[in-house]
Amino acid sequence: MERKLSLPQYLEEKGIPSDLIQTIESVFTLRSYKKGCNILSMGENTKVLCFLLQGIVRGVYIDEEGVEVTKCFSKEGEWCCFYNILSDSPSEFWIEALEDCQVAEIAVKQLRDLMKQYQQFRNLFDVLYKNAFIRIDEKGVSFQRMHAKERYLHFINKYADIEERVKQEYIASYIGITPSSLSRIKREL
Image 1 (cartoon, rainbow, N blue to C red):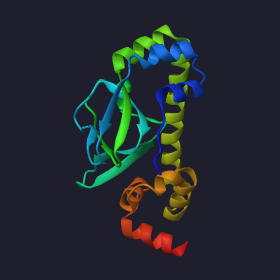
Image 2: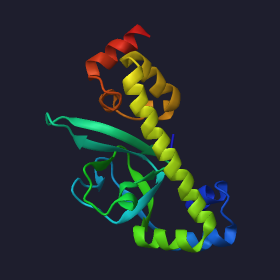
Image 3: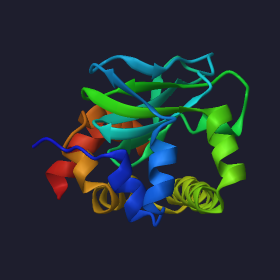
Image 4: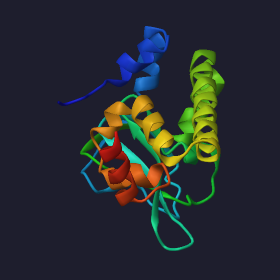
């Protein structure tokens, strides 16, 4: 099933007035990425923020043992390359397209200018910052308080649509277990 959003639709759902939607949309650029391509490479800062119109991506880093670790997923209606707005430093991870993706891209400088000019747009990003913090905190708490099986059940409860669309090894990595442990857990359910 093809999932696709439009930027105006998203902004309207977030309460942005239609006249402001046109202004905001005019500074975004549409880009497409093929499955397997990097939207952001480790060690770079693209100085853009991306809104996913279609597709799913994962944030990935290499741990101290040289193993790829999936740190996050983003799908339609979500933002990626958020790191670029928070820091001008090179990224410590990369963002990989897990499906063919279409994104609406905005330069960080233009985004900051819009947030200064329009309170409604600033409010939208205040909510996004808060939600990103909560998501990271929930993941940290789940690692401290939940066993592997509980983390998997929590993941499929919160992200059932992602679970159906990505490789199981990425989910295993995200919840901090091996693919074979995830297979065992799924057999037990």
